Image (cartoon, rainbow over all chains, first blue to last red; front, top):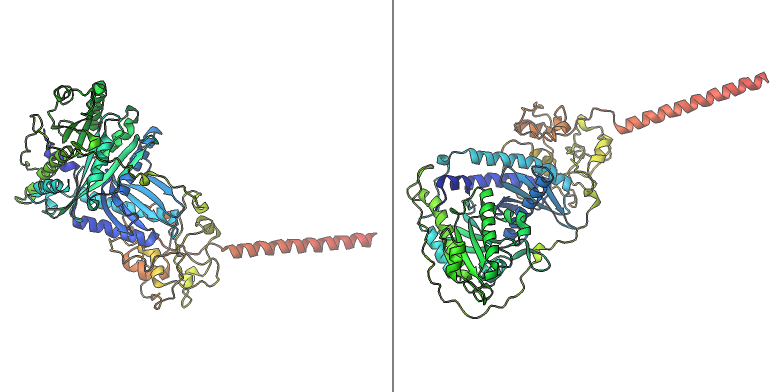
Length: 169
Length: 435
């Protein structure tokens, strides 16, 4: 009745502090060069991994979920057209625009930019940044589990979380 | 799938309400949204049709706050129930950590319930998940309908996994929270099983995790009495799903452009390096978007407002191979709207470091490679030479400049005209003499 340990280990997304700081460094560099407003890494399930730059929205969780949903729908469209995926997706607004690109197998890079820069510049720098991010994700994936930092959720986590939910409603 | 982010000290869990069309999935979510404290909930986002039928998904984040040092958040989704929307329904299931199946208790909906359960099983299987393994709760909704089937019959029909089940009247809020709490507890247990072993005993990877708590196969515990007061069904927000009219700027209508980044050496009047004395090629002008704020070389030898040193570095910093924390943004972002800053300090020494040939960086972007100059510019030596090859090097001005080409062609044209005139006059004079 329970999920096999090995499978969940493989499925679970765990980000450690040093991984995220590497990702943040790349995103900071990208924002500096491209002049974009905000860069967000979102996993394919819509969970926010990290965000750099200005907050593009007061509700970044919803934005992340919508980015992931839209990208998933676009991928289905690509499949219908015989493509593996559309690597990039852009939405252009009167003042703000967003570009979403696939990074590796399971992460999306969403870039929010405004009139201070332009699509060409954003795409140009995004190409390089995506390659760098992919290398970081490959490093993370290639790292043997024993090399991961010995941190984990505390023993009482589950009970505390359930109690917090009880308090909520 | 669960995301555990130790950097941000957060745990994010994805929960999905599944079930046939009109069974009350969105209503469940609306009740959760209405009753959750403001500080713990995000906006309820709904991608729905005009008739309020879910088209893609409804979504709300629910923040439990900091639990055992980790900010714990549930991302709660509903799927479109109609058979027609299976493709989008399947997308929402991606990475799900737990499912609440909302069944319609009506006798007329038995087949739809079964069909939706089969569909859930199939869609989970496509993601490599087994409905037997994933945390699952069944909610028998619409218990107030006159033709509602007895729970025992519904259990026999639908719950062949022995999953915990709850009765509910979602539009009054009855049974909504026991269902959600039960699933949340199961999901949290699952997370804890997979991660808790590392905290105390530092369990190594591959070692067996502690056995999971056995899934209750008994009928569900009697529900706690629910508040009887009906909850007003306020229309929920749909703002995030609305699409704003866009105004496509003409600059972006063209195919993707790749601006060529030129080191703005021309802006340094103190010591203009010879490699940049000539203006850029005319083709460059067509490739650069008209509003590109990138620091570019001046068009022609006309003097350009001096760029700051930091702007000068922008064209080269991306070429650095190492991971480098960037300085705070905003201070010197290369925006066109910003007035060019005066040179804050002397330009970097030009002849300190000789040009270093690029040591073939591992991650050279192929798209930009053809644009890179074949010879590193002397001015770039202080940056690129010190930190490896500059990927985005300025073009070396070697080809004839447009001004030179134009003047040559003009000269040739004038010469031809003059020669033609002289010849015409000579021929005319000769003819006149003959006559």
